[in-house]
Structure formats: C-alpha cells, structure tokens
Picture 1 (cartoon, rainbow, N blue to C red):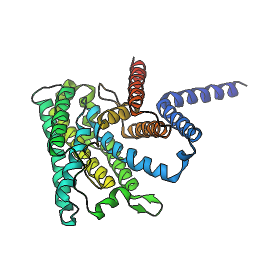
Picture 2: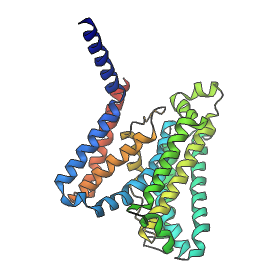
Picture 3: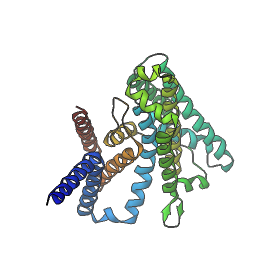
Picture 4: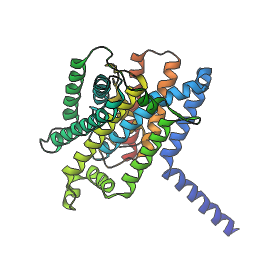
Amino acid sequence: MADVEMNNRVWSHKTQHFFETHSRFIIVVLVLLSLAILGSVASPYFRSSRNLLNFGRKMVVVLTMLSIGQTMVMIAGGIDLSVGAMVKLIGVFSAGMMLGEQGRLIPVSLLCLGFGGLVGLVNGLIVTKARVAPFIATLGMMSILRGIAFGYTTTPIGSVPKSMRFLARGMVGPFPFALFVIILFIVVACFVLKYTRFGRHLYAVGGNDEIARLTGINVDRTRILTYVVSGGLAALAGLFMVSRMGVGEPDIGEGLELDSITAVILGGTSLAGGVGGILGTVAGVLILGLIDNILNLLRVSSFYQLVVKGIIILIAVSIHRAKRQ
C-alpha cells in the first residue's frame, strides 16, 4: 500500500513538473488548435488548399524570415523597427532594376542582400557606438528607408524574371518550394542559437551585458551582428515578396515591423532580452497568421485588425511580465 502511494506521489510530481516546464508550449498548441477550429467554423473557405497556400506564401514565409532576425536582435536586448521599410525598399528597387531581365537577377539580388546587411550594420553601429536607444535608432532608419522608397516610386514599378517567381510560387510535388526554404532557415537559426558560441553570447548579452563583458564577450560586436542578420533577412523577405507579386509595389511592407515584434513576443521572447527561441517565434508567427487569415475571411476592417494586434501585444507582454515576477 505504501509503495502504491509512493508511486502515485512520484507520478503526480512528474506530471506537475512536465506541465510547469512545458506550460508555454502547451498553451501555444491549445491556442493554435482553437484558432484552427474557429477558422473552420467561421468560414468553409478556411480549410481549402488555396487559402492554406495563400496563407503560407503571403504571411508565414515572409513574417518568419523577419521574425527570425527580430528574435536574435531582441534576445540580445535590442529591437529592429526598420525591417518593414526594408521589405518595401528592396521590393521596389529590385523590380525597378531587374525590369524582367534574367541576366540582372543574380547581381541585383546580391546587391539587395548586401544593402540589407549594410543597413543592419549601420543600425548596429548607431546603437553600440553612438549609444542611441535601439527603438530610436531603428525608428529613424525606418523613416529614412520609407522616404527613399517613396521617393523612388509611388506607383507599381518594374518586373521580375519569370524564373524568380518560382521562389514564391513554385511547387515541389504537392508542397510549395518556399516551405522547404523556410524550414531550412528555421533549422539553421535553431542550430545557431543552441549550439554555437554566437548563440550563447546572444543570451549572455541580453541577460546582462556588463557581466557578459566581464566574461570576455565582445558585447558590441555581438549586437552589431544581430542587426546585420536582421537587415539581411529583411532584404531576403523583400525579394521573396516581390517574387510573389511580380512587380515592385510601394505599399508592401507596411506594418511588418509590428507583426514581427508581435510574433516574437507571442513566442516568449522577452523585450528585456536574454530569453527566447526560434520555435516559439514560429509558433507566434502561426498564431498571428491564423488570426489575420480569419479576420480577413470575416472581412474585418484592417483598422480593427490593428486594434486586435495591439491588444495581443499588451496581453502577451503582461503575461510574460507576470510569469517573470
């Protein structure tokens, strides 16, 4: 009888420990299942293959690219508000320079990726060397990039080669080619954060930069690299976006900085730095994408969608702060 009672206590303790350790994951899964059920009930079109493909191409792939970079920046204690404007600028620049010619595809794409990394480098230098708050530094860069994009064009411009459209619209069997691309990025990002020295440095810098500096970590270099990664991924997201649309649209990229930050916070990354992960961010992207998809199917005004996103951010931050306390 005593053995049975002891086994019950051990089982109860293990069960309690499991739920405490994986509470965030369990909550995320429940939220995703609830949203999937809600979407299925709200609209029969939600379950259609066409909607799922559009959902993945339009929202998940681009936002995941941006959110991976944003996760690294935020883990290190920063924030990047310029990613949406980068998508916009790369979209119009790349289409305007390619003009549908195959021979320009590779050089223009490399130029755009290099430009994204350069802007990230400038952001990092302003934050680390000029000691400007990340919010202010990247807000200023967002304004600069948007101004350049609208100065370049206020109407659709240029076009991309047909081969480039495979990036966003191509299929490998029954699956979109973009799905394999984004899975690769997720795997690489998870590996970097978990198994590389750079990943360990991110958590150390975000947790306490003074202690990190005393242990020999180059804090400034680590933070600069996060902005370079974020800028490069934002440029890649811009190329993906223009490959889906075929032309450079000056309206693309609006609000993506808010979406990426929301997804990262939903995934459990702290605004204070030192806490977070890629898989949580991917879950946050899926949650945000499903909410957007459902609201669009219900024809909810985009203005009210902004209200919903603002409420989500406030709730997520409040829950995270309460758990830390």
